[in-house]
Image (cartoon, rainbow, N blue to C red; front, top):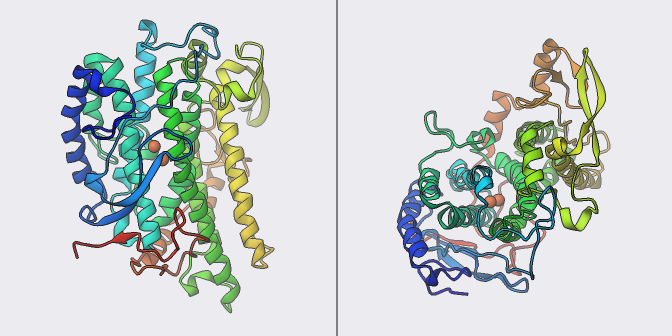
Length: 472
Ligand SMILES: [Fe+2]
Ligand SMILES: [Fe+2]
């Protein structure tokens, strides 16, 4: 472990002068990008942040006040636990790769660049949110997520620099040149070009979009390319907090909505300055349907190749499955045929994206059940939140050419158009949500549309001064 180096790391950077020099050359460009595209207006303030300092499960992070540009972004890989083999596919039982096999170079580069691109993209999407934060607790959590997405970019750039030569260095530069939402140089995946300019969207993003990230990282942590497996494994420990922010953030908004609904004489949460439950449902519909696209095509020869070559496994491939060739299974896929929904068997390898999407949908349903518990606790029995069908509102994949309602039933184009105003955010909804987003920077105070959390961060009280403003 080396924390005194210019780049904190546990990969013995000091002994690889060439790599160290390349990364030290990239570092000022990263910092310039951070100052340009990172959180706007808070770069001089003291934020109480967690910094990864080791990969020790018992204490891998250090908490203290830090100015964001001085955050110590480091490179950490989960240590090897003995000799690994490729755990699945046609190469199963070969020794895991320490270098990129020539024939897998293209595939691995594409996977790493696509993952890497999402990290700075989300920072860019969220860069204005600090100005309308509902509390210091939430402001700090936003910045925690942002700096860690920055570290995830470092994790992927390290792999590009170390294992992909000149191509890798060029990709690392390009990662700092694309911009979320830019017409000419957009980020690679469309969800990462959606504006996230209010906090209901931020919590939906960390709930739904980051959760796609969890499942992608998890399947890459099974990879036969060992450095990728170890890098993504450590990223998952940080990612868990991002998902916590999203899931509990939505729960707190739901709690406030339920309180306000019960309190208001007309049962209208908006009259109380809260966000009403039907509006929250629309945001869930929008962000969930956007995030499920990230898993890729339902029937996919790419997914089959990734699995066959041993590059990308299933979620918990080693822990959960006995059969690792993926050749014997079939997957019952729901398809549209002759205007009706039918089931058809697909070879398992070609359905790997769908297998991963299943895990994701189950996880979202679990969180949704928790929000519904919060609603019921307030005595509301006539409203439940729902995770929409994965077929609803799709732009890619086998469902994109058809229209479905949120339950997943086939409907006509006209019925979809009619339903949109009740299913998805309207301009009026967006204006309302935007209108309640006023900053609340007093320690322990919360904006009226969100309930306080049940506890603070890392043993600190909820009213702790998580952000010290020094520049205003
Ligand atoms: Fe990330
Ligand atoms: Fe994340």
